[in-house]
Length: 135
Image (cartoon, rainbow, N blue to C red):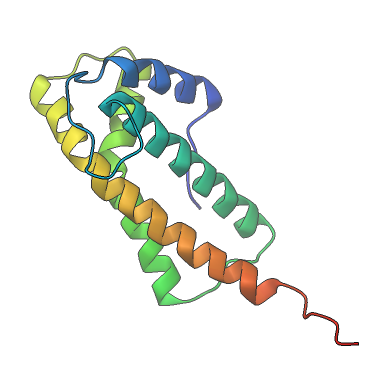
């Protein structure tokens, strides 16, 4: 069962992301003006996908297949540093610049893994769509 950060921690993370290595670069072809905007966008996207996964799980609509499970685990693994940073920040823990740099370096991989998970979920939507009526 995926874990979603409570809303208070989510808001804390958004505040924290504004200060996260502000001069960090944004990935090529990104529509974001700054790294903190990009990181915030990735975190929001992850939150949306995790919420959707929880809803599908509760409705017992998640497929029981290895590809889906591996993709979900890969997303959790790729986003682990971002989530750990948010947890530490919300607990008021100080973090080294080295750890912050690791978080920064992990954001693109996290973003890519979220997109893969979202693509699999889009396939679920297509599989579960009612057939079109033929006149």
